[in-house]
Amino acid sequence: MHRWHFFGVSAVTLVVGALLATPSGAQDGQDSIQIDAGGQSPSISFCQERFYDEDDGLLRCNWAVNFNFACFISYPSDKVIQAGAKLSDPEVVGECDNGEKILKLRHY
Image 1 (spheres, rainbow, N blue to C red):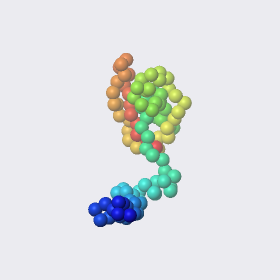
Image 2: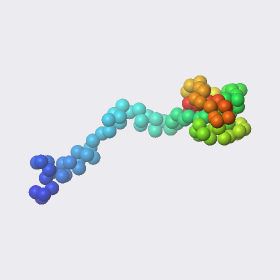
Image 3: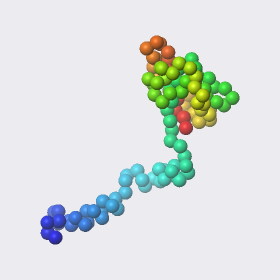
Image 4: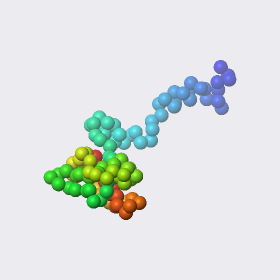
């Protein structure tokens, strides 16, 4: 039993203390509210500026998951984003090698 003592504190005390410790961000309740409410996490999508179209509450473009893929998708996709899901206006974040401007959109 003496070999499991660390500076006068038993190993059992250390384990129980570690199990009862609360992460620093868990007290505000924000994480549990999102999970319980079934909310979605924000997403970022990229597309070529020339394909971006906002019509009838839908955002259409050649949506891609990252900047590089947006350069290689050369036609609008079937994926649409609801205009109400926008968290910010699209912003130009760079150009492809061929000069096409790429937009980034934050949305749900």
